[in-house]
Image 1 (cartoon, rainbow, N blue to C red):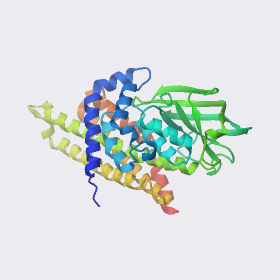
Image 2: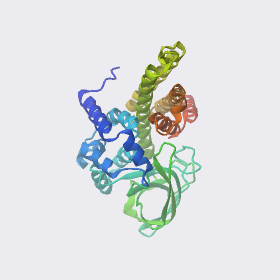
Image 3: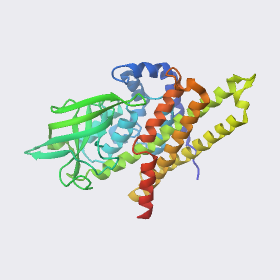
Length: 378
């Protein structure tokens, strides 16, 4: 199978890489990371002007109408630059979710998201869901022409940056039931909605969302009542594939930085990169990197398959391998850099944190190994 990018995809990758290299250097990242909001509106506007935010938006809504392969081509650059803006949560996951609904309000929101004028994020996982997407306790009770939402959503990435939250809530059934989950468009400043914001280990911002009788109109519901879970699952699978591609970009950056370091670091009158033991460790890092790269391609190719079982099996296999590679490459890079590998002033430590977070997002390696085994037996 040919895994080379087309000319158009390669140009897209080169453009985004060049832009982030010039406009989102490490000192820029540290300044944004230290800011109260944890993201930069000017950087978000720059990405919109570049057309990156319109990547997955349908042409009918003013977007480019691309898909997972084009997303893969730019996620590596986002990872290398440690992008703190809500690209994955809004321009990939929320966009993929909104595309699943033939809804005028969803189309209008996509149009504004393509230009950077609106940010939407999915609020689905709950404190005790353990990455089981059907485990939803939050409730939506019908009240005349409205719904009243009550519940608690956990670790919602970039919730504080969003102006629209796509919140799942159960309109029927019990936690664990696949049916009965609905999706609602809720303004971030809605009455009865509160956010507890905090930084994640890799410097991004997340929040727990508390819903206490939040009232939304019936027109805020996306799709049919109780039928939102398949669309949520599909969007999260697209996001998982994008996360794998981002992690590969970070791992490539770590390998490059580590090779450069061992070639320049002198000990006993020679570069430590000439020591055979360290050469073997570098070789092992490269093996894990290439395995992860191959699995990220598989994830991008399969994340939109209509066969749900085969799609999720491929994605769990990819996430398990990529997660194991994240841990190995990150740990080796820090050890080969010595004590300075953990210093805040060195970008290596921040790449390490980004890979640590990536290994845990959407389920860690053990979770996906178990899921792969269960899907293989069924």
